[in-house]
Image (cartoon, rainbow, N blue to C red):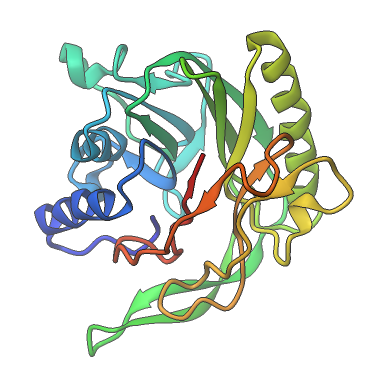
Length: 267
């Protein structure tokens, strides 16, 4: 969800809701979302998308407090590590310090929320960042970007599945180390809760690398970035139990709210 916000905050919020209706999922994982940040109207974007899709359960896991690229700090012990529909300050009138991170919304009841911190790279890299040209069309330009802390958020559902959402570092090898940590964590959660596990999200790894040399299979094989002419796959749904015929890859939709294309499967 990295299309830069416009000056039309209400319009951006409407686009977000419309995008969720297009995706039409029971469970959705999102990355690069805001929670009570000035630039996005001080709303909870995960809460908004949950309401748009009719999901009762949602959670936001901040990777940083503040706005990435500007002023931010790491999440500390005094911050909510997981903001949910049950503990959200939005629900009880308390003020929440704005954050940025990842989220999950689910129409299926969530029994447990869990989080793991993955650290960050001490060095950054030049990246291609989406921008809006003078003609109003989406373009891209290279810019040096410092890495930020990364996290993974897990929703254990009442239907026997645990869904882990993440957004890994863009720095090579650092993201591989983070993914290995998530796979180990996934097996622990699956054993603890007696569930099957999916790992979803923007893994910043191309060409099926997340599944190579492991027991995990990539359920999706399609280019996802950039959304206006996808040439590379960064986004995955990984499973260590599902086989061909046990799931269906759904048609890609264009939402207009992200520089990545969404990926969808039906289990």
